[in-house]
Length: 247
Image (tube, rainbow, N blue to C red; front, top):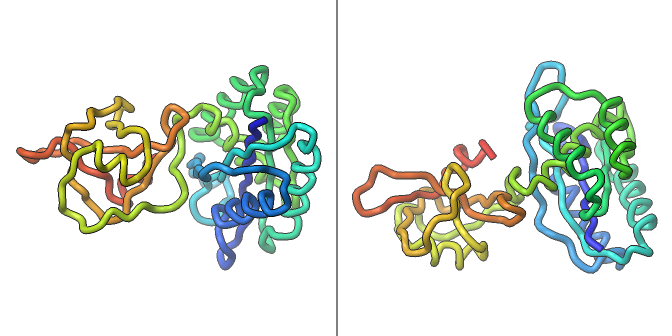
């Protein structure tokens, strides 16, 4: 089976971020043979507001794993113990786990995630939604407010069209141009998309704006986002690190 795991609010100003902790958790799950493989980690930006406490960006981390259904309860217990032991002092960690094919709860979770991107959500609403969807949601220290982001992360991952993939790709010197087909091959992604999510033709040429390139989640795949240019010979350009933050 495929299982979605999301964590939020596990760090403080001096500790490694939640992205690093999610990566460590995925590797530990593989090491302990609770899962056979883990996906890339997606970072989902949530609502920024004075009423929402967060360390730096207010974003949830999410990834999927392949596991034996018979190990599902053991997987959850391992994640709980991991967060209890490894979350930073003063953090408010939350954990959300669900079967990727939980059709009954999918739309409830997606709706919650989308609301969490534009409004202040409550812990009570998170637990109510998790109960309705029939999924695991738990807190592991502090106020436990991380359950809000953890639940939202699962919903946004399920939507298939939200979030940046953790880590950067390096493609060489900025300023050079290549075809979209070659860029996708270098990044090992199936396609590139424009600002509206439209897939772009492989023959079109793209200018490399920065040696670091971020991929994003679109249509349940990691893809490279491009933007229109006003150059004569090149139609598209990769996004700068600052521009990629809108995902």
